[in-house]
Image (cartoon, rainbow, N blue to C red; front, side):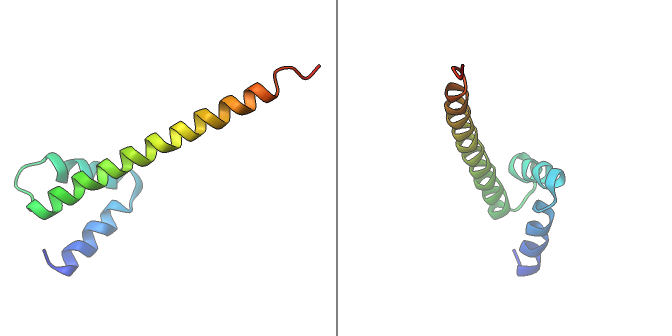
Length: 73
């Protein structure tokens, strides 16, 4: 892939919903460049890992805040 191809690939993935859809298309669609397909799969995996981490942090802090405010009388 050329530099301009990567430029437009990164530009498209920066658009919130369109980027996610295109990552899925590039990952699991046929006829795509192998490098772009592997990059899209790795990017989706990173999105999954970061989302799981954020959910875990949200649950931990959410439960700690709930436990702090339960017996205030």
